[in-house]
Amino acid sequence: MLAAFNIFPTKVHLQTLMKSFGQDGCLSVDAFMAAMRPALSARRAAVVKAAWDRIDVQGAGCVPVDRLSECYDVSRNQDFIDGSLTKEQIFEQFKEGLSYNGQAVKEVRCECEWRFYQEDLALTIVEDEYFVRMTEAVWGVVEDATATVTKQEVEHVVSLIRKRCRDLSSVNQSQEAVLRAIYREVDGPARSGELTADMLAEVIKRMQILVDARFLVALMKPFDREGSGCIEFEELVGYLMEKPYK
Image (spheres, one colour):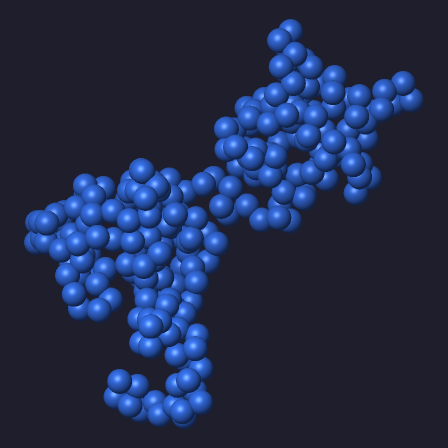
């Protein structure tokens, strides 16, 4: 097979391939093809995962191809808009792309047909933005608001908060006391000890800092281990005050 591409590996090279990708004396096509494809960028991988999670609601890792048809949205496909192709025809083209061995696909596995298709597709699209928007349109998902936020941008927001706490502090009120006082005003009489993105936005607003909401969500994300959108205020204040002069 490799000779058809003018590739003539030595016996040692072939033995290495078999050692790396062999299974029961044969080359595992799945493993070999997976290694040939470059991995998706973090941003692309995140939106692809969101799409799969919407498809595979049971978390089985494998779904009938008909399930993908149920989720597949062609409403913004130009051929569908022009009337040149039906949804069934467009999906059939997509389904053909899922097959990496020429055989008809009846089931789609997350780590096989789905992953291979997305990685192949990514090779044909240069811009992350276009890939993400297309995936959103086809599979009815929305990119995580924090996907485009960099570590440096989060660190800048942290620096702004720390600086503002220093500016508002005094001999009688420490920087941490400033932050806690503003939080108590926002938290109200409930004294929940919890912090949502909206609450953090209000705290920041009262400190007279202007920050886009997605940066605040990104700041909270490492502390939101359950993905509930709510964290413990003590965790965040501990992090912010750990190195207040940074």
